[in-house]
Image (cartoon, rainbow, N blue to C red; front, side):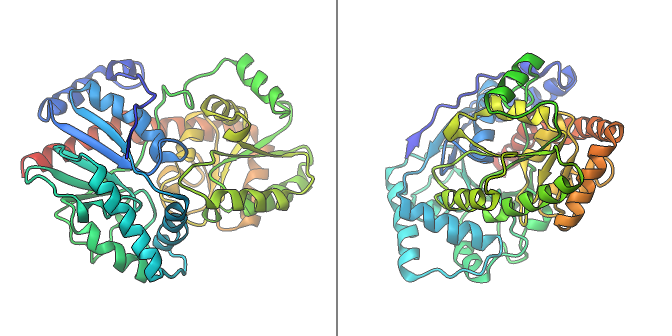
Length: 414
């Protein structure tokens, strides 16, 4: 395992202009009850995807309020991450996959190896998702240590064989965190269940305000025309995000509005080797259409660039088949951009149909709603303003920190 130093330098007082001073005082009051406690987050990558993105901003805040917080990233080879993505991640979200004896052994050996390397003698150990889940089976934990499993994916209809395999490890934890109540399985026997939706940081490079000149400069660099409508989908190249369906939606829109452009934006993460296969599949589906832009970190698209593209967008799209939460929805709404998304996972928590965007069931419906928004800019603007207020109330990192503190307090006293 490697210890990661988060890139964020944010402090709680930085958010006084975002939330009330009274709210910040409440958070500091809560933090006093676990002051000096040691916490470690463990996950599978320091870059790419929502988990790493949150930790880069959440950990500095946890430190600022008095928690001795660390971040560890597990070691694993390509075979391990291929198994955890194609079998565990996909299987837990319902795909019909099987797990061979050799694949189980590889998963267990890698977790055992990490358990032997790690120092997890912390007051609170927070393990994220399935990749490091089985570490709890091999680590000789201290009796005073509380272990928490944080699930970021949609567990509403898991493959029963994969679920049965991981369930025995989840039961080793003192608490489990889920994004929605719908993800909590009836056969899950954990002492404490917490429902904590993810969040975005309004002060991060991906979400902070940008000057118009910087936005235009970034669009020019990547040959995106600011004078023409832009549809943007920010998501991994992944079967569950349905990038092919996003292209099909765009093509229907283009028949009605020929000048429209599509941006498909992703970070290629180390723990997702399947991403390259889906990138190539998406590129083939896009063909030679000059108005479809595939934009990744491999060509310099980082957080600031994503910010600029989202702010320049007319409509944000998330054509997911399954979705744990979909941070990119909150990101777009925070920038005043209406979202057209599938009614799956955490998307309906964020998109209130007809209020700040639309929920759609197929490509045809998605195209119809996008066309409506492009042809009714005042209505799109109204929805965008509604989106800002909805995110401010529910999905900012200050609320996320507060929820974590409440859970740690509860575990400490029990």
